[in-house]
Image (tube, rainbow, N blue to C red; front, side):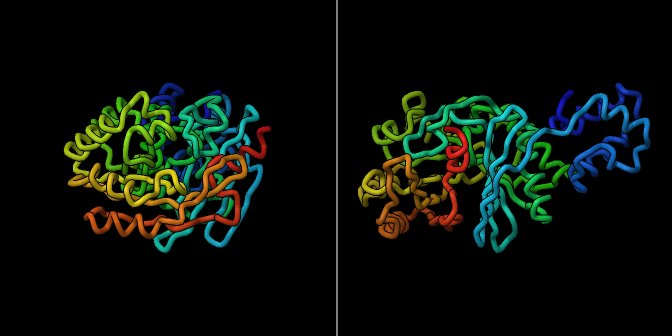
Length: 337
């Protein structure tokens, strides 16, 4: 049976009509799924026994559970176990403007970024749209609060799971679904150019973030193998095309690695690379892990100042969960030996 969360609104409506039900039942069911966040069809008390029986015969709730949770003042880190025994993670963050969640898009990752804990554990499979949605539902139920923004920046490369990610975005953005505004949804990619080109043709107002992490292609190839397939200059050109077509600003993610990509010269290179583009740079203090040799930069402030002086919009990401296993993939790495 298919995971009920894998159906977008139109697909579920079509399936219900096929089962001899009226269209309005779709909205009722979605209210139970996404507003009341129930975990069984029997809880949908206004549907009647006959419809509930049809739902139980044709659909299933996902078999995904919270296995572990770590908490700090502003952050909750969750480890989930999936139906097939695989593990994924999500991180809840508390901001002044509300709650955001960083969700995983794959079990493991094949991008092989040298500094990333997730990249040590190779891709096992893509997550279905419903499995990504379930991360939000379970966390929201756990804290009994509404989550108002989503970042697809957890384990996995979202554009390596493109179709499921787009379906996920459309479901959570739907006013009958989780009703998370498009501008409160961010997709982060390491730069799969064909998918960025495809993405820019969609009528979606969601945010695009690029995991750049280096100001030149030679350095980027050393720490991000994706640059062998999609060189930095080509990536920058497609971002210019994206900005021109969508009139939307792009976030440039840049993790600060000590004595790797954090020199003042690197800052000047980055400023030159991005000059005149509608972007802002998000400098990320590195979360060190015991498995990787990279260290947190001690030059973040100087790097920031250099970019500012060059006219680049730049921020330093607020740190979350430094006292828990906050680096993406850390909890899963402990579970998968």
